[in-house]
View (cartoon, rainbow, N blue to C red):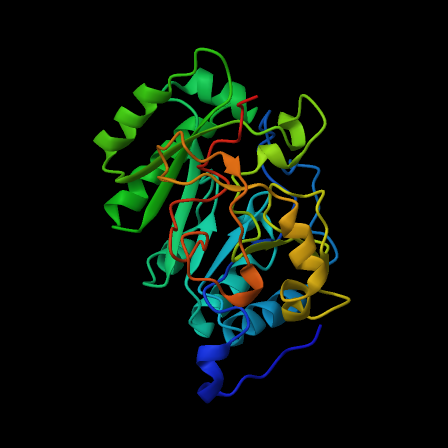
Length: 311
């Protein structure tokens, strides 16, 4: 990969200013959630991206003006060099969210999660263990995740929790009430998407929130670049073959993103039901600061925006 060196005086013109990147560093996970968009699980692997590749990409992202990084998987903490990668992101000064199932948290990770530039995110399925574990496929996962949510709150670590509606009769509202009682203040809801193991029909862009690619991109364990982690069939290039900035500012990316229906006008908050696609244009390659940019409306992302179900 090629690292682009940018002079400080050119900071205002950085090609990825305000962008948010999702680094899917592994396909391995302790869980086997029945709806997993990445189809990850215990048999997943870490792909072809090496630690050096990821470190270079983190440094590159910072120099290109990226405003936020997310480490995701699979379960990102299962990557053998997760600790080193998170420390490198911290040292680079890049605000980083770790999206973890919180089934296991080492003592050293708590110290890293408490850093001012780091935040946590997780998914929660029910206030009742049997219902939660019917989704995750692992006995004991509810107790572990709930315990670590409590610990994160106790340590005053920034935490975002998404309640994903997957099964009939799922206790979504009761789960929200429980999280509030536990001290969680950032709670979103979503429904299962038709991608990965959640697919019931051929996948298309209607399953996306409409903001994928608008200042948002994802990189896979093999270096593939997508508009977001949910749009896995929309390959724009590979960072092991081409510089990231060239991919995200090129005409091929612009044409790819143009195929995604834009977000509906109006509210697009975590609880909003009005985040369905329409024809609103978005030009991510220009570092757009309109309400189509994730940096301007961080609550709107593929985990919390409902897909278009209107016919």
